[in-house]
Image 1 (tube, rainbow, N blue to C red):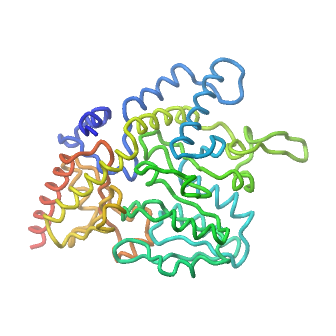
Image 2: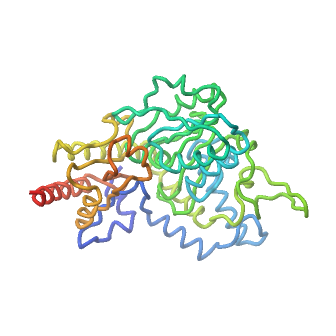
Image 3: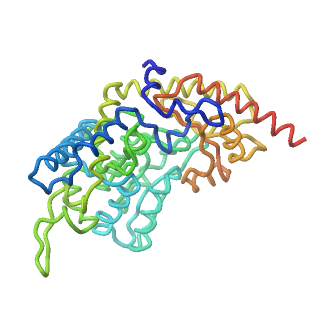
Length: 411
């Protein structure tokens, strides 16, 4: 991949921040958008705007075609069996809440167990906690080793006949750990537990084949993979989706409504009540085309290279800087969360902003993980296809300068 030619596709990269070139290192939170996606969204509103599925006039038919074409593109992108397995939501969080509500409240009973991990984003913890509080079920955790990988030594004991849901992240938004989800899903399938994967960090950065994984449900968001905000995806197997009640009631999801009863449509429409975010869905299709043109294997290779370079350079600054997550880049994504002893992560982030460098500081919606790591927060740089070694060099130079500044200030 020619990084600079890719970078030139992103208009925001021309910005100056405090008179410094923009260095965007927060793609784990949201990605930047190429001009083709921005233009596609504007073009849709200029030329095709009409509600989907409800009109037999030209604009509505064009809008519906764009919406359903993206559904087909998403299915192909993750190697799903059919476009009917793809549900559009607002984001990964809504997708996971949909599962907890529509599947969980139909199938979870008192004493049942839900297995997750300590590295989960709050969106893959809180919905299960709400469900357990309502249904009298129990959350259990796969242990986390000090290197940021899961301890699977007792997985056969953790996944038992009591286990009804196994839900975990494909890739940690803090540690960068790429979990062995296929192995864990296989264990869940043996006891007929529902397997759920939070793919918010997985789908944008890794080749995904949901059929090969044999996963029941896989959730991710458009905005983390070059697409617009407000669009989420939930993939589900046919038999799983058919066993789930509707999430919301209203227009679009119904088949027939009487004064005293109603019937609903089959998936995916039974989960897409109301007017969907059809314009952003149409633009999301262009984002998928863009990633497909690059190739997800190339995306992955680029992030291994850039993460390796960043880790090497940070280690040269100060050996006391703690980088969290596995050293092995075969199981690590493009995320670099770190602790600079004596310097609060918020100070690190603000200091870097003065240099035009945008990183994240905080608990990253992963407070149980922060407690497991023994910190209240970390600073985090995260990389994507538009980042290059020059970005890393700016980041490292700013970190050096900040270390010197805070070191002098503490004397």
